[in-house]
Image 1 (tube, helix red, strand yellow):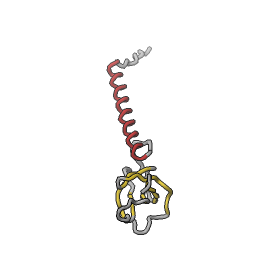
Image 2 (cartoon, helix red, strand yellow):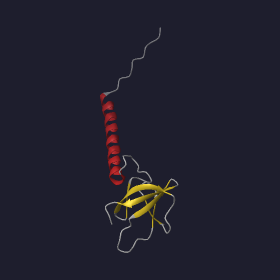
Image 3 (cartoon, rainbow, N blue to C red):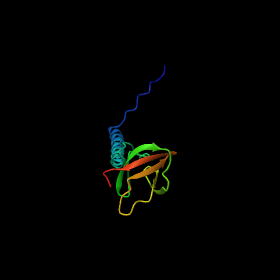
Image 4 (tube, rainbow, N blue to C red):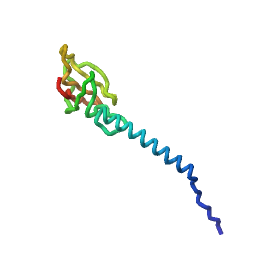
Length: 117
């Protein structure tokens, strides 16, 4: 005859702490996702290297299509929040760049200025 072990009971205080930890982690993750979404239009914890929207030179740019390569005269001008390399040509004095490129994961993606020059 074998003795049956009684299942362990979870104390209410331990259960409450566990639930609280899960809730805090969910709130932190949700806040991070909202922050990334506000900056890049992606619902992720970490932005991608070439997100749908990027901020560059105090302006918003929207992702376009994949390009064959960088435009002639493009120079490294910054990084996206996800680590992609932003390339741009020299702007005309007194005007905003209307097109930039992002090099990420071996491909170049074009971005157009949002909201006009």
